[in-house]
Image (cartoon, rainbow over all chains, first blue to last red; front, side, top):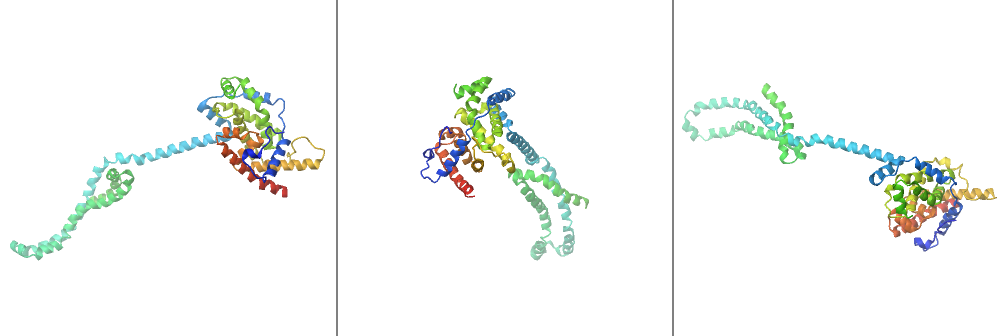
Length: 215
Length: 178
């Protein structure tokens, strides 16, 4: 016997196509209308007496969750996930700190960028004998002013200054490294890009700088 | 004593108040568990577990629905969980027909088989249809009580119930044809 026989209208069932299903369920309910054993309530209360007092609020939620095996697993999984998240965040801290700390090593790194430039000044030396050979002809200094080719040759030798320009470009060459560094420093932000690039430049340029000093 | 007063008394350490709840709801909870599990011993075991679990977490009851419905949700969840932990082969031997034993063993066997089909068909429903069908039929709750207990609008509960029954129909028809 059911306490509330199902009425199809209560679920808005207009058709009768579900009647066999409902009758199956109703018959099952009628067959299974049993009652627990007489001492069921006593057994429950004995079990309840062995339990700690129920709690309110968040503690009740945690205690209720902890009571079941699945809830216990869920709590453990949540704890592990929180620990992993904390480790990941802690692991990213070094990536965040250099953007602020790296500004101090940068000046020490700028000095090595100047060191490769003397090594480049060696290349102008062969060009200097050529200028010396021209010096006798150039002795008449007025001709220098007249002869436009010489200055033009000097202009052609402007590749010479180009090494000196390369000195300047050594900065941009370092700037290329800056680009790399800037690329890496991108996440660090625009203003911090130079700062954050400096430690990586220091690693890249210390190699060539050391080679230059060794030469 | 109304539900809120009963819960407050239990939280204050009054075990007699919880006994009132057990005595008031034990038949409904036991029947719901029996209808899901099909075995009286398992049903009593899960019903007892459900009461103990309700006692531990009674502080989470917010009073926005009937306490019996809140308890019934715990019991049906526990029963379906226990059913899911069973091995498929363990379903057959103890699947005796529920209710008064008839004189015809063949009819009793067929009735027991049909009960098993209904039980497994409901257990095979997806959520939220399974919960609504189980609460309505196995827990014998009204749609209003289900709506309050599950914090869903009544029309949503009606829709879930109708769709659940629609999904049950081909399964049960197929079993009959087989």
